[in-house]
Length: 314
Image 1 (cartoon, one colour):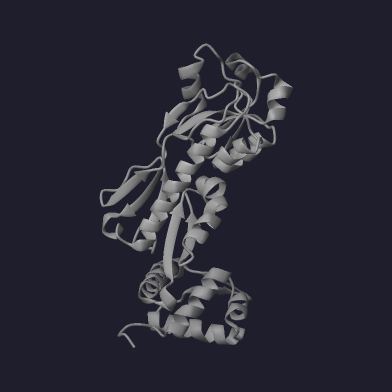
Image 2 (cartoon, one colour):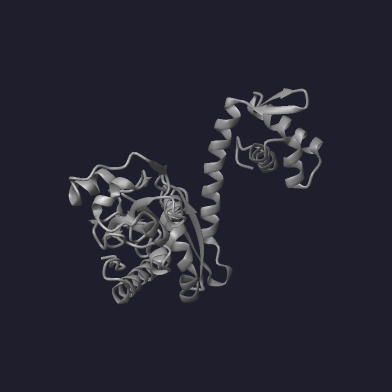
């Protein structure tokens, strides 16, 4: 036993209580009795010399110390899991922990992961999604696909191609509102995607400075939510052709004014320089590069109305 280290069973029980929110649910998840959970928690409190939970009638509430302790333990357990993964052989299986911006993960990445699995059956992939950047290395993540963020000094970044941010709407919405000219924007409800790198006022300033934006609008903090709303005919939205590529290809969304947009490099794949030679990273970078190239080729071959072509990603 490491000096000063509480019994692992106490820590496991404490973590279960914090995650489940009660002694009873923790007991159920650990397959023990509630009294056994209570015993382990009291033992841990004795070791720490302070109470971790405030007991009121039949309920318990974690103290501020308990919350801080749980956060610290969570980081430690993650590092243990990462270390175990690195040293585990399991028949040559490799592991890749990947973090991604939520909308790209939902709209583009997950629908294509079957291709990655077929190409690299030896790699087990774990995917987390969130807007905040992942702590590469410390939390076990090897790759982070970030949206509109600078590349950290100790990392290398690969741009996933230029994206065109342009107006999108459902075919029914276009027909219902008779959208034909950019001037028609002033007469229709808009959809705002607050994290998009190009906002409506920027697009209008570039392509239609004489047009007043309609004040009627819906606002979303996730691109995939905004795209779903546009697909359902709730408004005219401004979003990346990369994020909307599958909906455009399926005809669920169209380009009312053609490829009239603003280009930007928004998504970047990030990894630590010291990890560049890891086979999992090399495999994923090669795969996603090929997938992006295939999408650009499909976009270039797409046939449709000259007024509403599917734009290239590059």
